[in-house]
Length: 269
Ligand code: PAF
Image 1: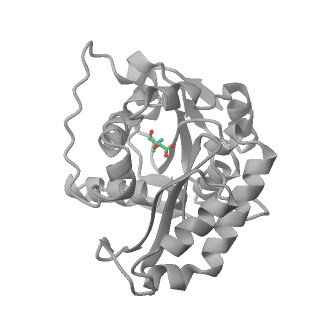
Image 2: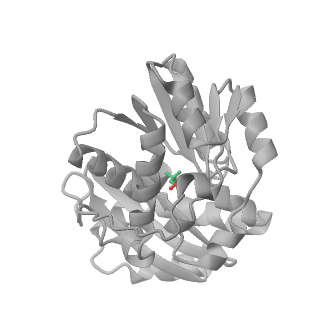
């Protein structure tokens, strides 16, 4: 496994390489990331993982500062899973300009959920993805369904620039108690993780009622009773139409963002 720290070197290393699989991450790797790496390896792709906590996708400085960093463990995980290259840039390698101006226009699915509650978040995500993909000319891009809205927005962005990159959506990996694996879980104690498990199981059991309900205040108060301090949203979307829906269907997913012990968690099912 090679660890590469600069844009020039990673571009050079990958020159003339074919069948590349790329897994962009912000580090603090867990089994969810490992499942993406395994998918890429299984496809016999030259597998590249990037680890970079992108400051421009955080709408809150505190959140950026406390984002967990476990670089040594991350590298061990990559090595164990036979990643071919880890791209581990410093901020100035990704953003060499003195003044960064982010002007991406996101046309799809941006007004809702994360786009609404984290202004500028998706613009920052697209910016870093654009920059990473200019260095890593991948054939396949592996993205987790845990960040479903991000997955759709990146896919739509790639379509909008006629990119040939194939996006591979990967299922969310869950802990035994149902909680979706996430780097932010590292910031929660066991008690909060148990509460998160209760919330997610309650939501799964009531999925169709949540979708059908025009007013979900009953579900919101239940989630608060479990221990969530604040709920940013609990909404059902039809992913074909990218619109809110009250109809259960194969294309309908329920999305939630809530705060537990000062940590904001998102999930969908
Ligand atoms: O999902 C993430 O970890 C990040 O949003 C991504 C895609 C690596 C961009 O920073």
